[in-house]
Image (cartoon, rainbow over all chains, first blue to last red; front, top):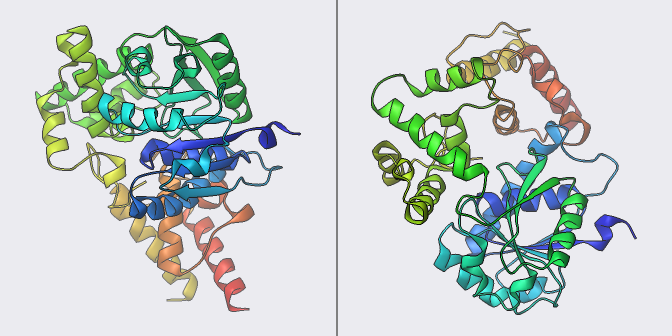
Length: 287
Length: 84
């Protein structure tokens, strides 16, 4: 049996990351069960997966020699109980994540990796909610998951070595490399990147330079592929604010307190790419 | 205007609206650094909706979307295929 026939995914949450990870799975030939509480959101998710598959293919990010996997969308996590890995990608709020994880972790077979996809919440904080903390582990996929070849993996204090091995195998079947880090708020990438983006937002608010100039300096002088404000729009400004709050509450770092301009954009419903407007305009086309 | 010119004009107009730049027919929009490659997905959606075509399979290559001329050629080919 090929790797793709061996593995299948259940993904919880049909938001930006859930849809992106589903696209990656299907693009690499895995069967994906995408679960959400909202039927309307699932219908929209099917359309977005089709669109994102096109983008992934455009960018040459999918294997050409492989048939696409099947996508099942459902409001019943029971439909995905046979999956070889569960990836929870619901809203970045601990109480929302624990509720989803508690229900689903009890449905799957012991030894199935149960993964929380988070940009900042420590894995061990959520581990009490799951049926088997030894099977529980974290990932931090970047957006869009099918264009970013590396995944940050977070080993919780109670995560067993077998869970880490099994998750690494699933990620390999998805064509991703992974690196494992310890379980602290924001791990490596968000702990460093999010306060930096927050500072970039402050610089814009204080009138030092507009978003375009800040990004152009990071890209032109520092060699960053994407500047901090475009990155913020890609992360989602609502998610960024939630993630900064998580970091601020848990580290006490004043630099992580969400900037006023970020909060104003979130308040106005301008979440970045996904709503068509953030620090930049995206022509009303959500992606 | 010929059909080709109408299509090219509509595409150029969309690019101008979105990038605030007027593009020469053969200028490579992705090499310019003005747009990121993620913009390609917006182009696919725009072309499909504006010209009532479906872009799939081997046509989904970034190289088909680099210039106004290339996109015009793609649209014409898919429309002709659709008429058959």
